[in-house]
Length: 211
Picture 1 (cartoon, rainbow, N blue to C red):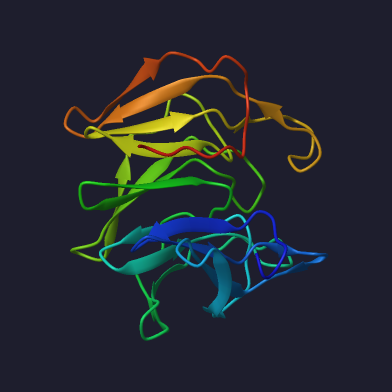
Picture 2: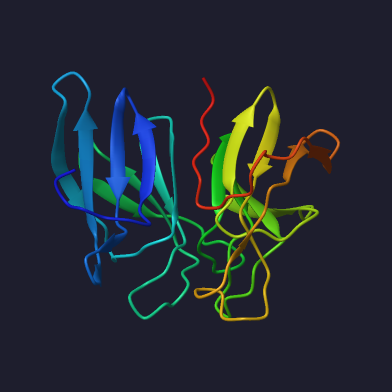
């Protein structure tokens, strides 16, 4: 990448990758960069309105959506922003009901799902909410069976899969994480969560993709 970073958001749009924000050295970055696989090159694309890390990033119908995250002062954000990479324009959308970071995000059947994460007290969340792209509004979803921060999330065949993550622990969350090996699946028709086979090895801050 042009800018070394970690805890950034990543999504694919129109055959290219977009890396957004994250930790840059000892500071929080606000830059966005784009990877062109045809040229095998990264390019600086733009800037976030406010630098952040540990947010959720997805793409949907030509736009990039940035959800929540943390500022340099560890303030959790409820913000939801959309970014048009063609005209490089940001739009502020309806905020989440809970300010959170380190959540999992995925798009399923016209909704942006936000799963778990941590709140302003660094408590690991079990709660789930979803954003309607059509209505620009949020609604609650039944909570997961297990609270998770930094899970991997993917949508496939009409289901939402949540994999691994960090579980609640009485010591400062940023210093002592206990990773999870379980996976659960949300059925939006039934409105219920089901257990799935566990990972061979527990992990958090992992990526998940559907091919």
